[in-house]
Length: 335
Image (cartoon, rainbow, N blue to C red; front, side, top):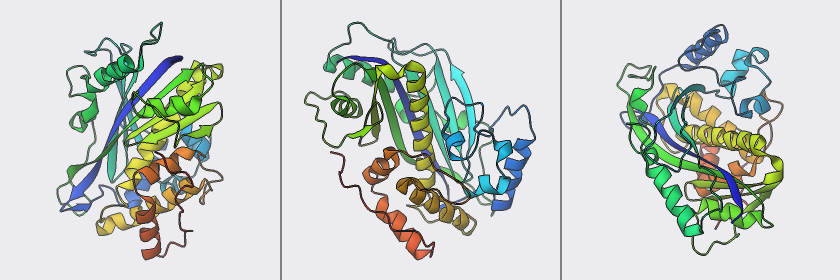
């Protein structure tokens, strides 16, 4: 296949668990105070506000060019996460770019850690069987001396992790799922087939069924993997930005979804209502107050459907009387 500039991001989500319920380590008011504090801190060396100095423009599209231009109450209303970044230059697999970027997206109720890689461009591009082997080697490789990538970057090494919720009961970290984002530039006439091939890790008999056309390419969601084939005419820099936008979106969706499929503590109830509201609006690609827009992408629709989250979102919204339109499954279900 005519692929190049293959980017891979592997994320794993943990929810904050206390006694079988999803706990929170910040009340709504303390959450607002922490965001407000970070607005006034120039050197945010720990968890920080996730933009404007960020390779993804996801939050700029959602809110504004800078958090200084957005009121703290508005940031709280959309459940703005905090972000942590570091990188390693060591990896035990020869098929990855030497730099391995680590990212963590943190809410008061969940955490997603992500490892970002770039496959070295290979000329000529290997057969599908060889490409699948390269990808498997990458995602099963270790990050430096850390655990395998497919196990998620170990949350234990991150700073500022909660040890107890606001009711002063211990917090444990419960695995809440994994995702992989694979994107590539292509020089082919059928991006629908290529997106499916990427999402399915280069199967022997790929099919374009379930792929969705996007501007300058296509996307496909299969299992816990999202594949994106983007025209080479777009250029590597724009494709990289798109890749990180998709990754940021999935990390956000994964964190919010922990409150849909679990029973929150009393302090977590407000967060659940807001999480369901944001998921509903992102799915429908319609803005929720106080936003003037949302990040419009078929990925939200395809991902929530693949995760069987549409009905649970509707159930919580109805039970809580949130007044949200019921979500409908997509007309075309990913194969």
